[in-house]
Image (cartoon, rainbow, N blue to C red; front, side, top):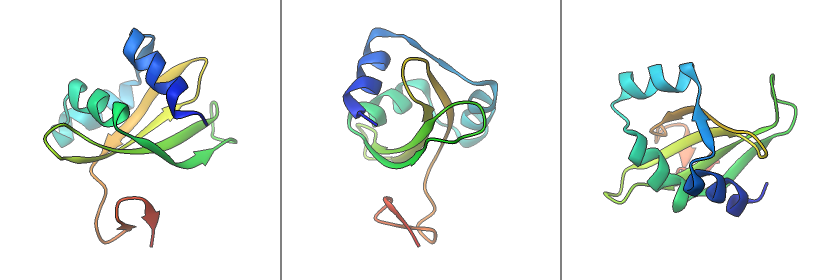
Length: 99
């Protein structure tokens, strides 16, 4: 998965949020601009080519304020933010590798 392709879609506004993502972001107090910031500074840490609806990947990035976020997105050509959350330090090493 090419991160630059995902970032290009985000920069151009050519993406959507799933209903699930919106609900989770509200519950977790994650703002839209934080998701965008984390993606612009992010990297792909896992790929899911056989995901349920379409290929997707898990991104790790930090917001401008230093907040760690994981964001699952469907891969181009149709970028959809599937969910976003703060990684649990008990489950992740450096927010990048599952324990």
